[in-house]
Image (cartoon, rainbow, N blue to C red; front, side, top):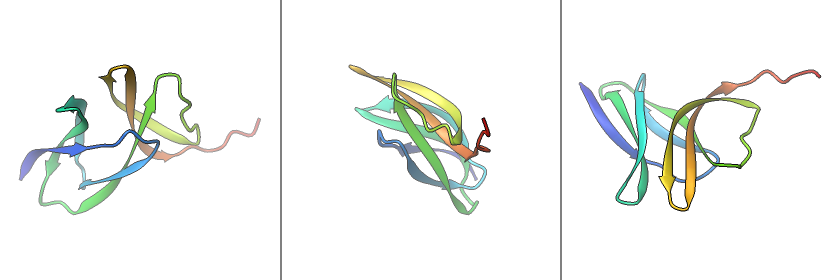
Length: 94
């Protein structure tokens, strides 16, 4: 069944969120003081881990991974940028 689910997330460099396989992340917002992801899920699919990263404005982002932007959340006085880590990058040979 095609359903939209909410996943509370933490403000941390890296976390794993279990979602049904092929879930489509729709957005990230704050609800009742908690940062949450909403995803369109096919609930009959097997659960798979998804890697989520949250970075504050001005903080470094690990360049060893490809970060897919999900959204930005204002949490006065902080601004958080949420990404899904999709894969490791190939190291540069400078």
